Image (cartoon, rainbow, N blue to C red):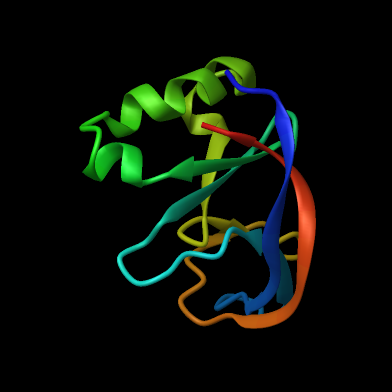
Length: 113
């Protein structure tokens, strides 16, 4: 697995549909067609960025790309794909952030898969 790099990302806010708490999440900017996927490890809190071009153009599988992170985190169930699986710290529910407000652009430490 590649080591951490400093990468541009967005800090966004999405409202939990269960309790209406605004929840912050970090996501890698993706253009039309989706250039990147954002994952976060439950065990380590590590951000992972997957270049989806590897699937579309190099014919790699999702499993092969995610597997190095799954090993570090303790299994596939220990990795969240953001914004599809956001954790609300107030009501402890998982939700898909269908609508997000971009708060700021930042540079974060992340692992590229």
